[in-house]
Image (tube, rainbow, N blue to C red; front, side, top):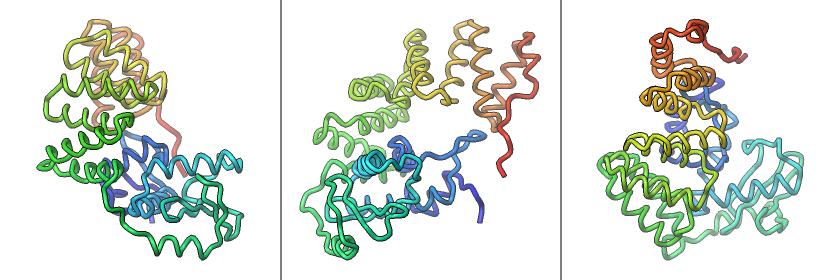
Length: 302
């Protein structure tokens, strides 16, 4: 069995859409390793993803999983415990967890209630469907719809409904903005990302997306501001370095473009976009570019 799995492989193995994997990544539930322009998941990540999928299929929102795990780690000093080592179960409309070394003692992190083992499984077996769909249910359905190009309009309708039900949630605004961008509706995409940032100012993905839109419509200074902010929040954001380099190059600032091409290659040294970055460095023909014949490469993983 391979030690690492690509996002495409994980999507097939776990049975969830890539958009859902990206959402769980943004929640920091499972953080894949970024290498060579690809995201790689470990076997332990697969275990965690299966647990998350099982819980969310019981109509428990992924955000509740995120909060429960954060509370459990904070209270028990388990910051180093990977999600894949926590046994997670649905317990009614709550989440039950058993930590490593806790034998069979389960707890509901969100309520602090201790549970007997039979209670965990009985609760899971006796769950009843809610009569009406929640914002999280609709969001989940929208993620499924956007995985199919012919159903993008349906996904957009669902995200709008989610926003009506829960206007202070940034994620549906981000996903709606991405769909507007796919359809070429840049101003609507911009508005969606601006709304998301007002709700979540430290969202690196949203700063990056807005920076891309602003660069596309020619607002260079604002584009640089948001792309730089994405890097400030998430220093290893290789794509932000790539787009900053491209923006600076179009604007005629070769020195800053050079700097960000090099930084991009430090974070992502393989793949077609890395080859493009090298070609841009070679075109500049500067002393610095000549020195970067072989960009930084991560150590081999044993």
